[in-house]
Image (cartoon, rainbow, N blue to C red; front, side, top):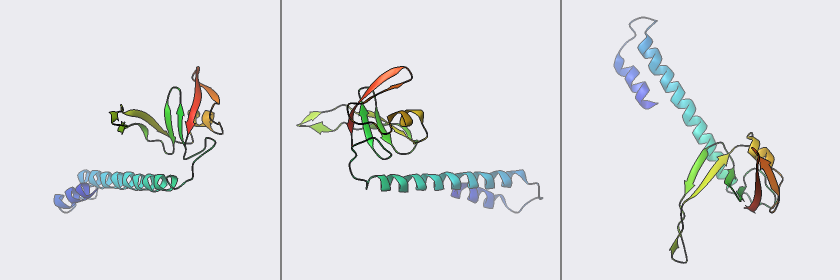
Length: 132
């Protein structure tokens, strides 16, 4: 955002009202400002989810472990890796998780389920192992 604004300022005065370079820099600045605002909103939302109590059933804010995948029901941030750390001095491999929003079909399939329940998604059965 700051870089696009600075480039526009460094460019000098408008040559005419159809100055495309300055317009391009202002559009870039506005695009970055919107992305930054969306990211801040997402971070605030995630911080609020961390304050929620543990879950008995699958709902928004829960972490869900199935026999096939691991989900964080929050915002649509996609795939991420969590460091495995160590347990009793033994290193554990990193874990792959998926942060998914409430609008995704897999979220809708999981919502309201409990440990031991199963779902069928994309023709594959998954059993809920853990909810926290």
